[in-house]
Length: 386
Length: 156
Image 1 (spheres, one colour):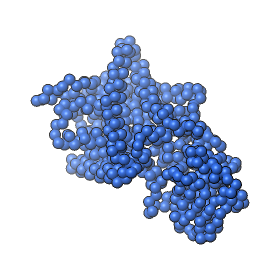
Image 2 (cartoon, rainbow over the protein chains, first blue to last red):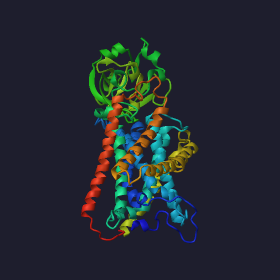
Image 3 (cartoon, each protein chain N blue to C red):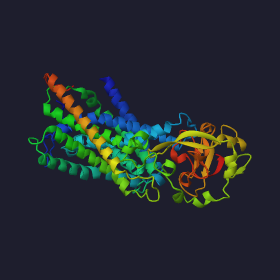
Image 4 (tube, rainbow over the protein chains, first blue to last red):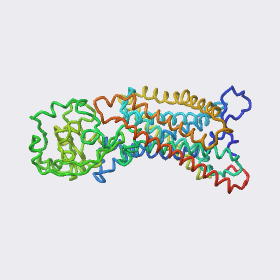
């Protein structure tokens, strides 16, 4: 049986006296249990990595990538999935670490160079996995007790985590293939104990999902007690990430002398009344935040392409939207040619037919399909060709 | 067998390349990533888990097993109690950042406090989810017990 294999838990070793290390019940710490949890944890991490990579590309689009404008809900779904799979991975990772915890006390600690390399790779994997989940959970709560920049460190360590996961799969591949070994012949209590353990791990993962996914799946929002946001709580029934007070734009946004400058070949400086006098369009689009919450709303404003046409900006150009904010990482955002010319990309003036609340970007904000929330620039003051 | 070997070598090569790119990114953008701080936090997470969280959970489990002896309390109740405590612990871990975060100051849309009714509904749904999972485990066990014909141990 696998339990009696060369890496069995607490196995007495020849030649060296095992120090008084803790002993563990074997049934919950079998390789088979670890593999059963690990399969789902691996799926969660892979999904989390790919959706995270998409989020990174969406926030920092390389020059060769013109992000799609359709489907408009793409980022809403990928980022909702990113955060949901990360949160579900928390109980799964804890369960996985619980099953392999006795290995920490394996004796002798190192049997060969290959064994040492494998242990080191596992340590890297665990460190990267804990780092990613911990910093991710802190970020969705907007709690930054660490000195590094969250997106940069979370992005770099994500590659380490997925790479270490592949190395771990390489090391464990024979065992993963052999996992389907029959339970027949195993003591019944062992099987039952393991099933109850797995039920706890998967049950907790499902419960965590149900108690948080309401931040993006609106019918479940009452249940979202673990999530930092609810899709309909905030001014004009929409959450706010950065308030006007924090951005320091209150005075300039409320100034009657406000003008939106479109710096094309024909430079225009439009007052709010002039913007409102242009042909308006109403669209239903989500604000989808990188922190996993999203909320679909009805927006009214001037299509960006109309403004670009008036200013003489030819199609095929990337444009830069600049906020009235003086500082801040998301003071400006780029709109690629595809999104800039999409009819649903608006310089929005109204939300549900009412003027935008100051915290939602009054007097004018960008709203476009399939964009991360931080790139839906608020308090627009300037539009230029990038 | 050669196929298995090939899969392992490909996984190893791809894994080292991906992790290497991560380390390169970490060291390439040091202004943002602050590699020493990032490494300290990564090692700190491992130490906190292995040195504090896991021993505490093991000790709690050991004490609980003695407080709720198997000969007195039925297996399903012990399993359910374990599930509830595990989920409660995970929820505490997930809620710590919410409690510590200063983000709700001046922004009532961050961490809107759930009403008592919302909490009650959430607890009921969580209990039902855990109960269903344990029920599924019980059902699988019962099915295996009915059809179990010992065929002897096999490794592969």
